[in-house]
Image 1 (cartoon, rainbow, N blue to C red):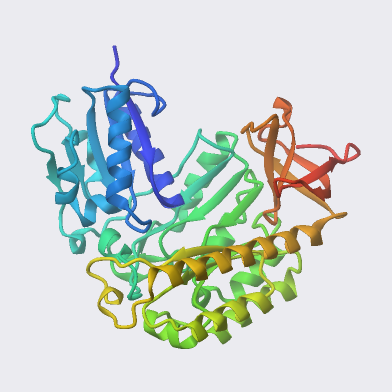
Image 2: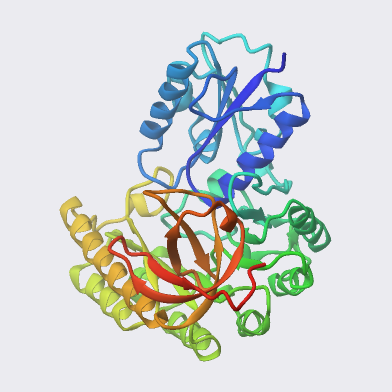
Length: 439
């Protein structure tokens, strides 16, 4: 009888793609995947270092796993495992901790599943982690996250990602196109390109051998995939050529997520970001010039050391006037081994919270305005298999979230619709257009 393995993922889309890849490794070794809330022989927890309270979240997930199967073998991998492996060994019940390079060799590291008195750690220095391991998520949702790049060569003062994932590196264009074709063969219709800094795509063996725009053009030829979505790209790496290529493409959708972090040039300098607000505004204007219906999401950090109230209001006003669609708001929190943690001008927690609240309200205002601008227009929605209160959900090409009464025939189908009204829950209600065929 095969052993059962369950997975839990904390953090980003890249983590989800890698968890899925690790799951396929287990299946290849004869293990049977099972949902996390069921009894398993092994639980693998893929962690994140970006979100707050990594230790608390990891402990909670470990406790949850052991509540389902008290004698299960617990493995912790991911960014938190690379940065603070010794901290994880103090969590009761953990048997194995694997760093960035070791997680894809997980089968070689597990023993006969005998519980350990103390967790074993395999964690090589991040500077020695330079191989690109391909990954994509599949089978768990309509969209697939395809990893095209890993690591980061930037040195933003607030970020631990380079310490957790190492230097920037990528797969080859040919390999990634082959993976896209493999994903298409499984019936998936949308691929989200993901990585740590995907605009820096193309580095192998320490040299820039390809460009992200060349990957975009190559993937555009994979006709079996209906949609490609770019998960997040730095504004200084989002070139006119990329924007123009997406605008012309039948497959790359009009949706960009572009980290800003601050609308104050002073704060951007303190963060060591590689652009200023003027370049960011230029990128948004270029996108809207070529794709007026394009959805633009923004990452922003509030409460960074040295951010005065005037600096924050400058950010608020910049975002308020910018033609964007929604915000992802992060409240700054100190991270060990970062320059920002040693900076003067710490912002009191209450002020951080108030600034975060203001930007969350602004985000809702921006999202509603973007949705209202779509009402009465026609679009295509790819429906997902979720059910909530009798409704299912889907997304248009430009990332409008819609809902409709659940119909199993709509799952993973692209349907022509007209956006009709905004529901009380904030999603867009639709009318299907029967004269246009679903496909």
